[in-house]
Length: 236
Ligand SMILES: Nc1ncnc2c1ncn2[C@@H]1O[C@H](COP(=O)(O)OP(=O)(O)O)[C@@H](O)[C@H]1O
Ligand SMILES: [Mg+2]
Image 1 (cartoon, rainbow, N blue to C red):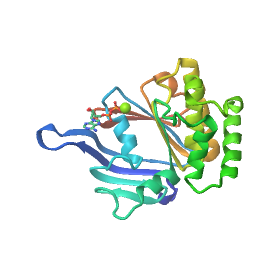
Image 2 (image 1 turned 180 degrees about the vertical axis):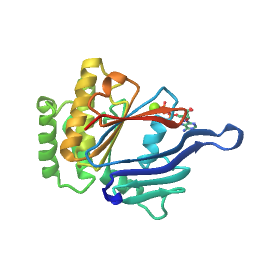
Image 3 (image 1 turned 135 degrees about the vertical axis):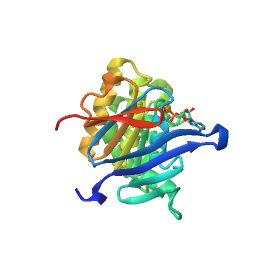
Image 4 (image 1 turned 120 degrees about the vertical axis):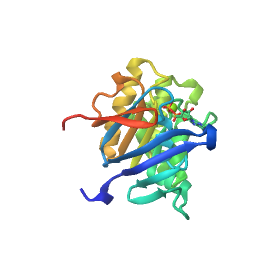
């Protein structure tokens, strides 16, 4: 595969918080590539650096060393690439899903999804149609006008998934998306995420510390003390 065909490439990615005696090496020397449509799970105990890895790839946290390439664009190489519009790249290329759904509390389900589309210049009527279609496909057609507080945990997380996927991002980054859900809802959310990522041909990185949630992933990275210590590939 042509190198530039990767959705994500990281090389010697290192993130150090703080300086001197109090410095914490949260991620050390991570090197891997993820293709479009590929599903990667990141497993590891609390404090092992999973969130730092995602936010360093996701244009939130500036890498201290190493390289990050998203959809062919070198976004960091020994620090951010100068002159990049990080906000815009985040909006156009990435979809984020967090443990807590992070929905905007004063907007309804459909409005939460429409915001993501309108911010990328889709017209209001188009955004409304696409949000309706997306939420309906996630079995939320009856919840369009409900506010986040009126939704169950699983429903809210499905709205958050709809929002993250609305722009068909090349890369989806999910940080413990099932942690606040019971096992069955967690499995449903994970299955949905996998299905949509494959349909959209998005690369997806999902952090979890629950082994039961990683069935069906193409690869599993095991993280310990800031290092990827093991990589397991499912035969396909
Ligand atoms: N903003 C920060 N400032 C300083 N240290 C941090 C910060 N965020 C995380 N850390 C430290 O980096 C290490 C990895 O944290 P994190 O990436 O949150 O791990 P995980 O998501 O696996 O629980 C931990 O030792 C944590 O205390
Ligand atoms: Mg974390």
